[in-house]
Image (cartoon, rainbow, N blue to C red; front, side, top):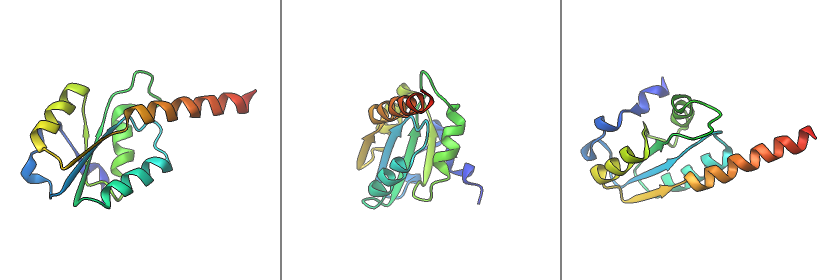
Length: 123
């Protein structure tokens, strides 16, 4: 299966398309880690379908499309949308998920920790 088919445009997502209950998770996912897979699995265990929104990053290591493709490759993820913060707000209003989880702050911390770890190893 080509998991890139899970990637939708924000305007093409509608509430009737996603089985209920639905969770929406937003994040940066740069770099995708096992922690992400664990968190997404825990969320997916509580709902029928999982839509992940990949947001832009100011100092990204990977382009947004590449990050979306990595997230789409996870079995627990049903749909992926590439969006900015304004589109995220519209999407949430449109699909009215039963659960909405924001991972942006955690992603920023994890990326900073990864960079610090790499710098320590190089010293």
